[in-house]
Each structure stands twice: as structure tokens, then as C-alpha cells.
Length: 104
Image 1 (cartoon, rainbow, N blue to C red):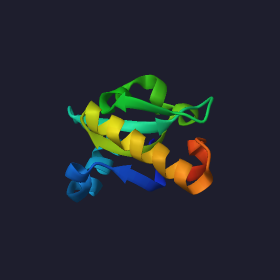
Image 2 (image 1 turned 90 degrees about the horizontal axis):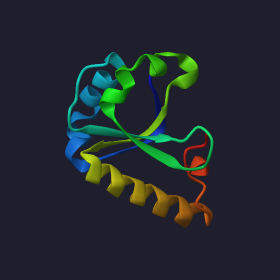
Image 3 (image 1 turned 60 degrees about the vertical axis):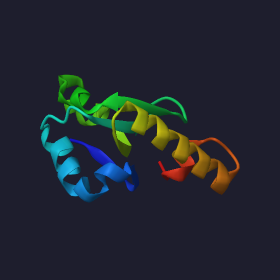
Image 4 (image 1 turned 180 degrees about the horizontal axis):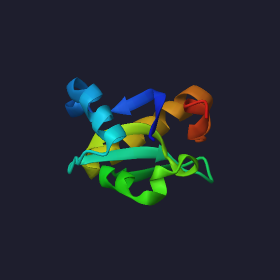
């Protein structure tokens, strides 16, 4: 069980394959170069995970599924997306609380 934000950020290189990548994340198919960005459970911060982490039993439980707000190609692409997200939230709200950007 994977939850995606309606305001999903995605790397430009994955934009054309958006539906396929999301389907693979939902079904647990391997994607060696894909990283996900999720809201942290306890704070207003973001976490970067390799997509393979979703195959662990811990993330199969509904209470533990990450709320995915971004999908990136490679770790550096994920860092770039996080920078874009934080800049957008600051521009829109004047604060760094990223949960406001995604209405979570």
C-alpha cells in the first residue's frame, strides 16, 4: 500500500514514465535508480528513501506506509527535488513547514 500526494513532484527525466514508475512502486517491482521523497512521520521535514525500501515488511502495514511527495531519478535528483519543494513552501507560506505545501 503506497500513498501519493496529489501535488507530486517528479524528476524531469521520469516525467514521461510517471504512470509506469508509480505502478511499479505500488506493485513492488524493482527500480534500481528511483528514489522517493516522503513526509517524515514526526516532524515537518522530508525523508529520502531508495525505492527498494518499500519491499520491506514494515512498509506493508497501512500505518507505516510513507506519504510520497516526490519521485526522483538518482539520489542527487532527489536532493534537487527537496530543494525545489522547500523553496516552493517558503515562497508560498513564508515558513519551512513542508506539510503545509501538501495539506497533510
